[in-house]
Length: 230
Image 1 (cartoon, rainbow, N blue to C red):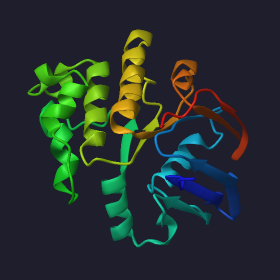
Image 2: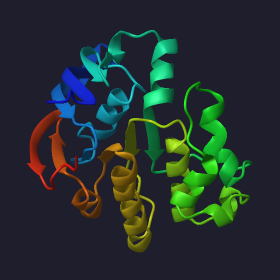
Image 3: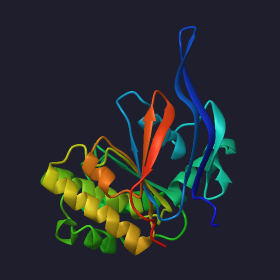
Image 4: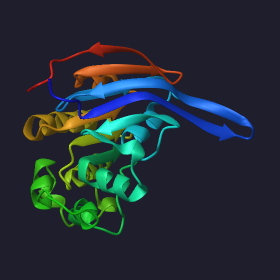
């Protein structure tokens, strides 16, 4: 059996508040296979975004380890960790996080200036997300859904193995949400992308192969929804 692209073992995360230790994650074991779409769901304050940030190398656990494509990222110096994030991981956030002074094509290309290695064609990415006609528009000239599609194209520019989304449709209306979800499904089918989504949305969960439920920093249960495509 192929090794998982994400392999998290015994993850704990605590924050210090005065003399107190506040536990956020309480012993998370989690694997995600190549090409899988996973939705992480749970109430506010359950640890969803904290777990996503740690799996994506944006933060480190208090204890435990994470293997991304076989590499233990918890033992890397920050320079090497940044390299892994740049080459193997793409992020899509609820707030889009586009640079307002740059055009759509410039926003898509931005991460490629900081990471060596194989890149995707930014023009092709804008075509895939249906925004070739917006290549020279700035974020203020685009709708929320268009901005999110630019953000997805940007996340793909460095040819990542894993795409993380933190409430990626949270600011969108239901019709636009459906377009974004169709796009995620296409990315999995066309690029064999592994996609890990934090969400409150039942519509987002519908496209997942597996839904994982988290509560009070512990994985509560999971449900297999679809069959992983090989």
